[in-house]
Length: 192
Ligand SMILES: NC(=O)c1ccc[n+]([C@@H]2O[C@H](COP(=O)([O-])OP(=O)(O)OC[C@H]3O[C@@H](n4cnc5c(N)ncnc54)[C@H](OP(=O)(O)O)[C@@H]3O)[C@@H](O)[C@H]2O)c1
Image 1 (cartoon, helix red, strand yellow):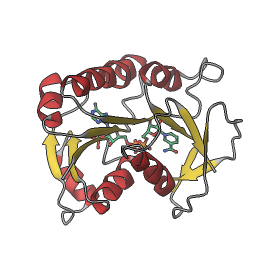
Image 2 (cartoon, helix red, strand yellow):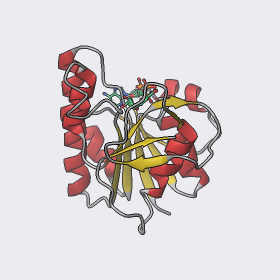
Image 3 (cartoon, rainbow, N blue to C red):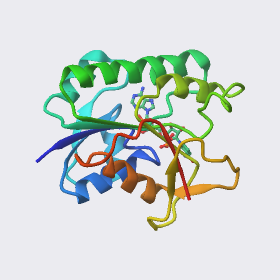
């Protein structure tokens, strides 16, 4: 059974990704800062493996990545410039480097629609995410609606403030990226 490490599993994006991974038969390891809090949020019945740690802490990342096939990252790393840069930019880059050293085959990272050269200039979090991006999905506004499968994936999709996609559809898209047969897409926008 392949193991996927999820970073940000207590978040609104990471939780459905972790659930979907379990449902699809993966072993799911969660990197969490507070295991009790994570269990309280995610429920105790699911059979997740918990790895204590955080982005930026090389030892905990190294331990958590051992034996994994892939890693998923969706975090909001802080609100002040220094913390955002430390966690989202340098923390994610460290994770990506370690994942490569461990020979991991897949890395998915959820960014934001605004994290583009043409849109990010005035938006600190988007500038940091833009710098952290590698093979990445940029969702529009996220909703809790059920999955429909009716979403668009592309580059330079027109931006509309009203555009949205459900977290369930985003999770399904991210899982497709773990499939050996999925094309490598690079950075894409995703919306309905
Ligand atoms: N929500 C939306 O509508 C939306 C739309 C488009 C794009 N996005 C993007 O989707 C991504 C995830 O958003 P979200 O809504 O899921 O955020 P969220 O609900 O605020 O969750 C943030 C996650 O980041 C984790 N985290 C924070 N600092 C960390 C660190 N140093 N090490 C490890 N984990 C850390 C948190 O863990 P703790 O439990 O330990 O705090 C939590 O699991 C972000 O990049 C966001 O910009 C969101």
